[in-house]
Image (cartoon, rainbow, N blue to C red; front, side, top):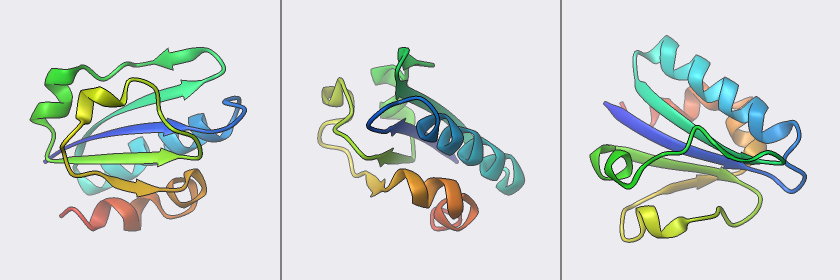
Length: 98
């Protein structure tokens, strides 16, 4: 299974990166392939391509703000959660897709 995720928060200093780390850790535990893009103070990092969005089985948006370049996944179903949910319940979140 392939999951792509975007994390983004208001200040983009800590929480979007914490959420990304937790999602990667949870995916490793659950044997799920994941790529997480962060949109923080440094801009877009680990950018997910349109091709990667198209190949994904699931798209997760763990955001507190509207992510940049949302046209890449336009028309695809997404699971939108808060950054805090991704931090605190990452395993439960990804288990929904198994």
